[in-house]
Image 1: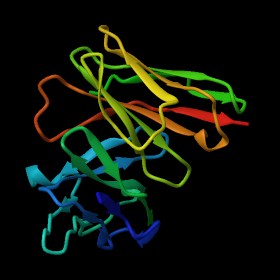
Image 2 (image 1 turned 180 degrees about the vertical axis):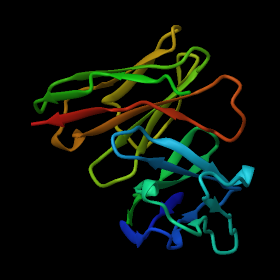
Image 3 (image 1 turned 45 degrees about the vertical axis):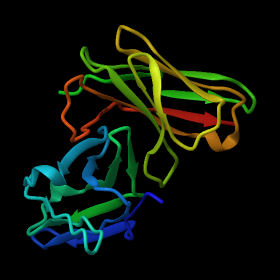
Image 4 (image 1 turned 120 degrees about the vertical axis):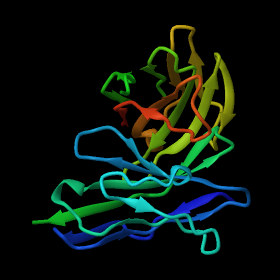
Length: 108
Length: 115
């Protein structure tokens, strides 16, 4: 079965602290994984994708096929990072399977 | 920049009624997907349309149907509304020549409440 699991509903950190949002997936094929972000009162938007190996707004995510994980990391959290983060798995480029999301709160 | 728009913003219906939600994609976005996002959940794939034909469907009953038009607009129709249909409905489109990265551009959503 194809599934994305985000075990934490809420993650609270102080500004400057490291952040790791966990994502695990279940998929028998070759996965394409994404992180989408939704800031307050804004629409869902793509943050980064594993295949491009990029760093966006200081965030990185590495695909670990052995652990079937795609955790999102940032060494120093900023207040403006507070948002809802969704991990998503692309299946046959037809659809995205989303996790339930993790709310990141960064306190000053 | 995403130019996906959705209407209406909010909608209240009663159980058993029918509803039509609308989405307008950017020019050149020939693939549109619809998602249902229940409270506290991630978006769930309903179906996708490509060149005006359904091209993939999630685990939703036939009373969820759609249309895509040549002008890059699309509709989501839901018949015989049930209380559990209350959710945020998201439209997402993808450019014709998108890479395999499957980056989709999301609209702001329509909040449907079924009483």
